[in-house]
Image (cartoon, rainbow, N blue to C red; front, side, top):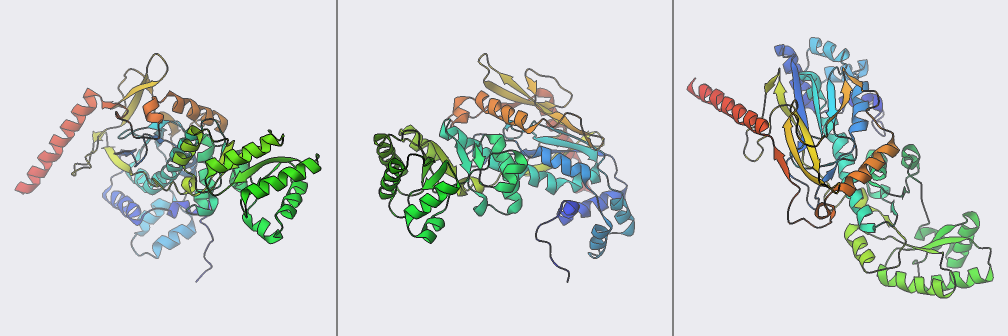
Length: 460
């Protein structure tokens, strides 16, 4: 048995599919079904504790799709499954995505039933993409939707990602940082991802360093000497004692450069007030008080509302695992084949047929006032959200904005949400999303056709 890879390589992403996608692709190929199909990515209902989803991940996905290939090694591994014909495997050898992708811009708030993206391509090509489409957009949208709530709760105070250690895999830890930057975080402790995505890399110290030195002040002196402007972790033994010792040390040594202290346990509001008072009384008003320790957006909001003198927050598990709402029930459903509408008609999961567009209206103050989902070719009041991302299998030039522009788009988009939708609490009135008359009629006619076919089959 050959050595197992530590992580999947980019060159192997073509096999990051569920088997049934390849099985269906072979069935399409075998039946000569090579017409264009449209698949739509959406969710039927909002995740728990979310008033919207911040779309993220479309950019990474498009780049993966553009480069997707089946190598000789991939074909050999598929041969070993003894499920695929040589003709179909030859088709895979020549695989190149040739279709189009339309998507909402990164950082756009979206709501139930609204397509985040749509893929139009020969049906087997589009079907093979299903798991990659869902995984890329799901992970980054889940994490961005959590992160933007933390930023909102902090009310202008910086929030830093400390979540890598408890994230679900290295891929999540890396891709998550891009989602965090999009959502407005101020920094990350993740050295690789911070550098790759231009998010400032931040870090302080852990209790283990102080424990290893045992003498707390020895640890502080060593760190301050090595890292001027550092933030010292003060709760390893006794917070007030540590802060008092730091104050005496700084008074005796005016050249010592300490940027702040970090609180990681206890009643953070009370601890912050006591430490702030001690520092201010001693004349050290410029030293920041940072807080971490199992924080989520609700605790941050409570600390901010209480007036706790905390200058910034570090968040770990709550952001890395999005533990209050770790999943979005995304679906990637066929909506048209060979120009004809297609839809699902199962209980509780009836879908909407046809390629679509979403138009977003704004009120006189610039706040979002409501969306309407239409047929792709329709026009309606408001701004169309789905934009060309790929055409003829290649990225559209200029379709992917620089990351800093995407961050600004996300900031503006969140700011345009009604206050009740920005809130951490569930709104009394959800954001209004409606369907055009023509789309509603298309669904009605498609349902009638499905029922007619079912009835004919029952009579056979």
